[in-house]
Structures are given as C-alpha cells and as structure tokens.
Length: 243
Ligand SMILES: Nc1ncnc2c1ncn2[C@@H]1O[C@H](COP(=O)(O)OP(=O)(O)O)[C@@H](O)[C@H]1O
Ligand SMILES: [Mg+2]
Image (cartoon, protein in one colour):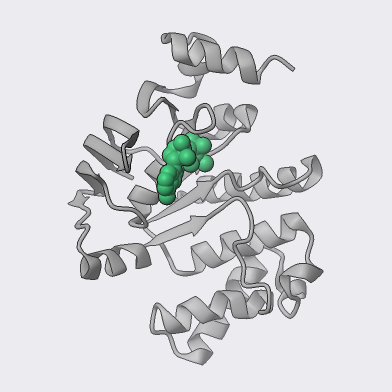
C-alpha cells in the first residue's frame, strides 16, 4: 500500500487527538500502529477508513487523496475492510449471513453470487462448518476469524484491524494472529493496531508509534524495537515489556 498523511489534525471539541501528523510510506504491506492508550490510534484508523472527518490536513491512500464529502466517503468506505476489537458481527445473523448481507446490500452482489463468495471465503479460513452458526455459538477466536473473512470478502484495497485480539484469551489470540499472518503472506495490505508487540515485530514491515497525537517514531520493526530513538518509544516499550 501507499499511504500519505499530511499535517493531519483531528480535534473533538477542544481536545486535539491527532496533532499534525506527517507520514509517507510506499510498498508497505503491513503497517503496525502501536502506542499508549488514548494516543489516537483508533482515530487515525477511522480517518483512513473514512469513518471520521479530519479537522485539517489530508490522507492519501494508494495515490488517491480521500475526499471527505459524504458521497465520496460512501464509495471510499466500500473499498476498505475493517475489523474491530469485538462486536464486529451482527448477533442475530449466522456467520454466512454476516458475510452475504454487506455483499448484497453495500456491494450490490446478487444473493447467489454473495452466497458463493461467502462460502468460498469461509472455506478458505476453515470456517465452513460454522457457516450456519450465530456469533453466540462461536468461540471468540472463530468470531474474529469470521469478521476477518467478511472484511476480505469485499476484496478491499486495504484491511484495517483495530486491536483484533485484545478481547481474546491467548489460545484464541494465536488462531487470529495466525490468520492475520496468512493474509500478510498472501500479499494483502494491512494496517494493524495492536498491543501484541511480539507479533508486530514479527509481521509488520513498518511500525509507527503514536503518542500524544504525534508519530513519535516510525521505522522497520527490527530498528524500532531493538534500538528505539525516541524517549516516547523507550518509555512505552519499557512499560509494555516489563511483565
Ligand atoms: N468520538 C469521540 N469524541 C470525543 N473524543 C473522542 C472520540 N473518539 C476518541 N476520542 C478521544 O480521543 C483520544 C484518542 O482516542 P483513540 O483514538 O481511541 O486512542 P487509542 O486508540 O490510541 O487508544 C482519547 O482521549 C479519546 O477519548
Ligand atoms: Mg483504540
């Protein structure tokens, strides 16, 4: 993916959450966004997804500047796959229907086409046996895998994942991280907010540390984790790697 943020500012009322972010990257397949809670990671992801408007500045994805007018945003959102921490799925619908519904309603696929695509995607993630189950009948890990399958089924230009494992126990975390790594290996473009430092180090080709609304550090994981250059990164890593 190619991503360019220029002087990006986001305020909620008088609270400045993103304080003039500049970032330019190209040929990155997995960008991990890390940093302290409240630092603006989710807000940045939502701006890239077109779910929030910037207060100032621009975002360009794969060479096209995101147009934050209502009509253009609807189109932009359709080109992005998003997976959040939890509660991604409609609780009253089966896994299969959770995938076919957006394909039909948002992407204009016929019922038959949507069903074929949804089944193929579930099959691809070894989830076909669960197609008829509702979220409550699935484990947390299976739920997140279905949510990722749904994000992939729309053939997005990039998949945004916001702490996709933070509501899961370690075993379920592992099955979801394995799936994310597979996506990366397939050549999908991912923008991942995560607290799993070991995973970020392993899977990301670039890492950005966001703290107090600014990018405190950006670089390849080997460098950022082994020889952090900024005080904010050192303080953050000391805290999260302590136990
Ligand atoms: N819709 C909103 N309205 C007001 N404040 C918000 C909103 N969304 C986020 N914030 C505030 O923005 C700050 C950054 O939040 P967030 O982007 O969720 O950080 P992170 O994901 O890094 O924990 C927090 O102080 C949060 O309370
Ligand atoms: Mg967040």
